[in-house]
Image (cartoon, rainbow, N blue to C red; front, side, top):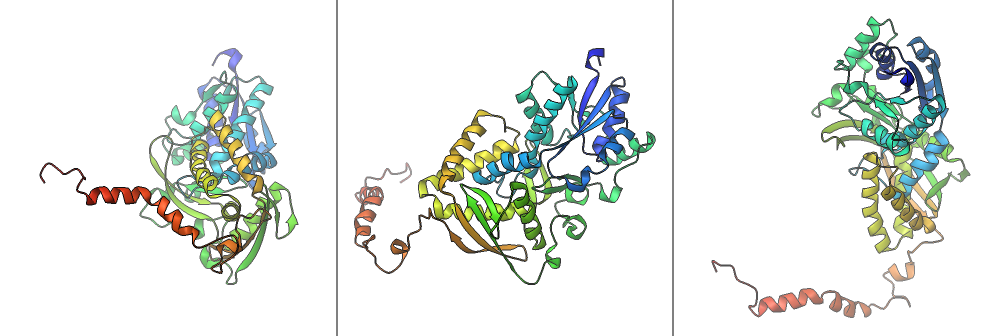
Length: 412
């Protein structure tokens, strides 16, 4: 590394991978100054003692940047309003955090005059794409160091042994060397027995945000969510900040075993992987929001928004957050959310969510029209002409076939 490129900003979690990276960087790149940066998106207790860990591993300093409010308001809520779900299951917990982390890493690199940013994402994972696309979209002049694409270490066991050789305390045991990612929206688990799809996850061993079903309460619980223009603003009638709402929903839904997903997903890099995702509060909010949209959006808008939701999820998953298309989709979504205001009450019980009621001042549900009792707004006789016109193409085709004008196959 040239003398004028001697500072490296490391995306630091204090976990096994990034603990290993610090001595590796100093050994491999002629002893650069390693500046650790932990971007707090809601890791909880994982941020405790990080400065001591980083310095003990050879870093010169640690930035601990709290961006939880920004994460929820500017990344989680836009995805919630979009109804974004990747491959019908994944609520994008890791995916949504990566562009914000990339943004903050660039800010720290600029402040420190560093020309390198280093991350601990593996060469098989999605996060290398998300980090590097995010960094490149903000400052393409910064260079990337990705140790998993360079070093000879082949497994997390190798990383543990590397730390031991370099007299660095290993932050986990082999029995708990899952690859995990935690933020205020979710907790993901990969590795160990999860790499074999024929094996049942050890939920009692794995889960940290969510009760296993056998440990959930035997009585259901009601929870009411208030929305204003697609954004949750209150839980059980109590107004809260964005962060507080997600924390409260995590607590309530986690107690009842809500939001555990076992997913074999298609990664950006072309392979399939298996992960266990805990997203208790997010699952509750996504469900409530979806139910409210059913009441407040007209059919054509609802149908098109469903298509946009899939694309939004793909863009977020693929690391394409800072793109014109994602921004345009968010603008479209915001327009659809102007009438998504109201209350949704759900019953939570043994991993299930059941709708109890939906209420909105912008409801498009009209009991006088929908009721089997005839009202002034709907005349049953009108349906006859509608069906005749709606089915006209089918009738014309049938008449053509009956008149033997249907093209015959060569062997007929």
